[in-house]
Length: 148
Figure 1: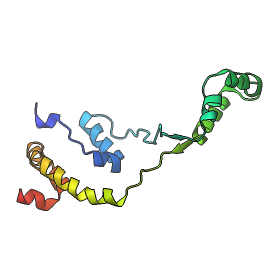
Figure 2: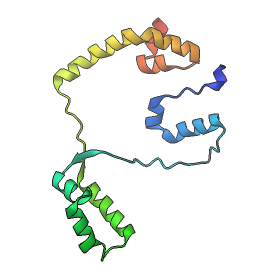
Figure 3: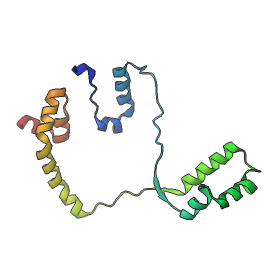
């Protein structure tokens, strides 16, 4: 295998600049670089606000069937019913809260960073040499790659 056959990508670029990363992928694969995929966030999960609402109205059961057959079907066409169901589901889903980070967690971060640096510094340097990348400088700081 030759180096030209590999495309090395950085996850941070995917998070920060997905359009640019995709252009690189399209160029590498010889796909039309003018193609613009939909990058809108999909399938955002969260916590249910009401389990009763979820079980009664959104999942198939006798209550839902009766409501649909007698109240919704006569008044709403199928496409509007699907929109209504989607909207109810969105309203019944709360975005997940980010976990709270306490002071003791913050104190452990530098210790963990140093331990990870010790574990991965050598391998990251070798990876950079092999692939011609600069992950070591990005992840560990420029001074580390010069002193290693």
